[in-house]
Length: 381
Image 1: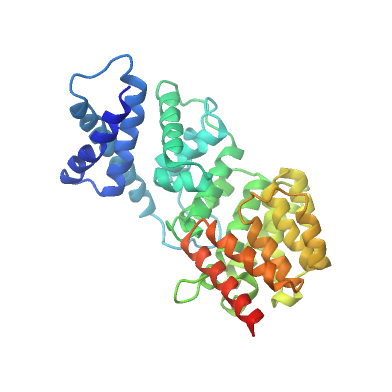
Image 2: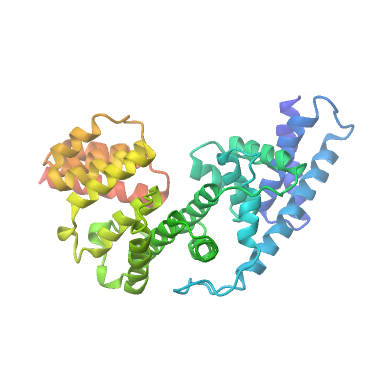
């Protein structure tokens, strides 16, 4: 395999697709799929015209993706832009496609990645960012998943847990503001809740509604992040909060606790507090204990440390952090916050600056940079 040849041909093939009418991002995805296929096929069957081969395969991949995206957009046009309360009124084939992509022959991570690409409409780059892996790695994973399911019968749809993970990731991607898919994720979860009597489906729907209720207050007019404690709670969507709490209470009454119900319970406690000072942090710590038991996730334990710091004081929070790997995403930001609460402004400012350098997006980087500058200014007075 001549990797130098592939590298030299990539911009030429990309340029040809763009001149044929493909938008740049879609052309990049198509060319990347073709490169992965070339790595697989060329060692055993090298083409006589490598450039022509790449152009042909890339263009086919672009057309396939464009047709899939057009079909998805037609399905989305059937729904209102914002999800309406209550049971879903219409069921389309999108939900069925989620189950089909969650095929038992795929690993859960591959099923989620394939579904996000084929049905959710996310680009390879966005999925890679969600998984915290290089884009090339995710492209190979998606291509392998496509090859795996290309020759199998879709008579064994995937399980509910995989579909819930997909919907959760789609919602989070939409909630980040990079791609507005949050309303579509809520719509599909409503359909799933109407079709399947499952407490974790209800838990996920409640979680989405409770987070979506705060969406308008998460950023300032200039695009900067607004921390939860500083959000204008009078602007939260009380209708969505009431619906989320009602759905959650019904799910919890069935005594089949799962991770989405536990996360929704934490979100409900935040939504129930009239202001940040009246948040019931003791109960939130208890729910994080349940969530940690269910998931054994280091990210959950990181968030639990924040709650412990609020409930029992910053030094207790720092003690809870001591058992965690400091390479965890946002570990430095959490540590900075707890040191600030403890009065150590020098350490907090240094850690905020460190966290800013590791931030996954521009809005978070700017927020952490401002935190560091604010503390440095206070310290220098």
